[in-house]
Image (cartoon, rainbow, N blue to C red; front, side):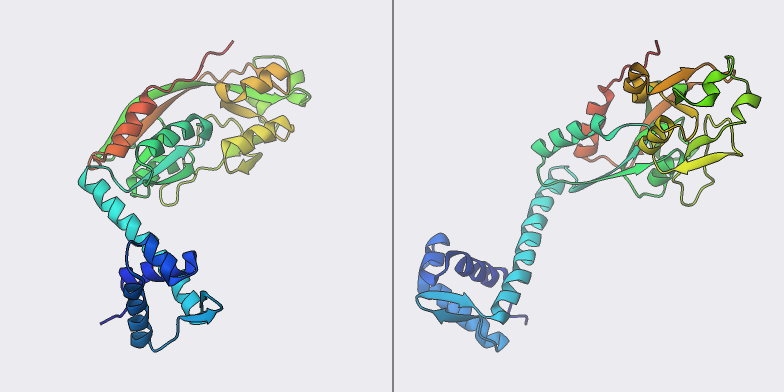
Length: 300
């Protein structure tokens, strides 16, 4: 039988923190002799010395310190397991994995997650950023429990529940000093083809990647997320569509300009989606909060 027990590890931890058997016994509401017996038996079973005397203090040996450091991880894990078991019993899942499409800035969702922590401080949140088809794929392949801001409608998969969330409007932008600004508007496809596009790479791992609003697929720079795309536009590295609400400040400051183009499909419908089999209270709570989130999608 393994001589290590949670009780022995708790005693070891208390002695190290308090500096003596007497102080540790007080903190644990036990008598010092009981702690001495626990440690003596543990040393006997393991065949090692865990403490040595330095004056009046009991100091851990190298072996004792190793056991204490690893043991504390076990104590934390045991406490976490107990808390998560209670959560599950009450319908609160211990972990919630969320895919946030890059079109949605994290600052729109993080305050809601922070409020969720206030309700369930021990829940583990795993927030990842996905792009286009990768957002749907993360949900379909069970890498996440909730997809926020997925573009368009669910790609024909069964078992997914979703609702219309926001419809954002895209604008065609370029840096104020970009040469495309010198052309008459609305810009024709042939004019746009003369200049580099900035394209956010679809994050799909298994399915065919999607594209949306890309007018030049021959000259382009690929970036990982919407923030990189916006910064590339500001630097004049390329032109393209971006959500209007993401670049309002740049349009107002003159760092970017909005250009009229012949292409008219500028509305982007966004979805919130999750597996029907997921009935966790954390997911349900967060979905209800997200439903109330709005952004100013007007283009003026």
